[in-house]
Length: 372
Image (cartoon, rainbow, N blue to C red):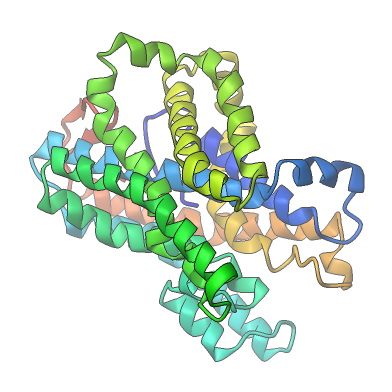
């Protein structure tokens, strides 16, 4: 759920929509949340999970665009710079959250085990379905960290065309992996770890969709049919298709056929939103309050589950105070942790970059060594 610097319009707005979906989906089960509002979320299926999938596609698209933009501008991809940027961007807020959870556990406010902390600290929560609710949502951050570790190495080792083949293969194989794991758990061996449903191999196709879009985009933008397909008017069709597939849940048709179609629709959504910033949808996504929610999305994602506990009768876990605590915790995380480290990251970046600025064919304004 990260917010990276980029010249691409609408991406923070899309992050805002995604985190609002996540929070709404988790709010629906909490005490005193209006039933009349919650019923819309139930009709659309697991809205929170859908929001995470949108995050994945955005991450794949943005990370690949930035890395390929760096290669085009400087002739290389610097793993050192990439991982340093990721560490400064992600680790401070994440480990501050873990520290607060450890203090809360010591004080008896929450019940987290040493095993919970071990999975969280090593970004492997996605392989364990039995983690406590307060950190269970970190499974998606684990998937993203594993992506950050593996995908830049892939781009460094392979040319664009072969990297594209890897992404396309993942898009095709991912639904088969999810279907196989689901069938094995529910029809063959219930003891099989259900956490494998959120393992990296089972989730990589969503990230790979964004990667493939970024790699193909320079060529696609020269094709008339693609420009027509990603016209802003197609959003009217793409959004209900995504919601309908999401409503189908884990039905085999939804997994095997719906997932690729959903990935296509999400790619259209991203392309249309970034290219048509002056459309009605584009103006909404670039509206300052929406953009700020997108900027805050990482902290919001970190802090929502400790307060959106649907099993609790505690006052702070009931609506609307639970939402207030989420917002206050996220704002504190942003202003006290994220923003200071972002400033440090920018200072380190500017200390190692050349002044020349270029706009690459991947759509990112970059300076030598300056990608965020």
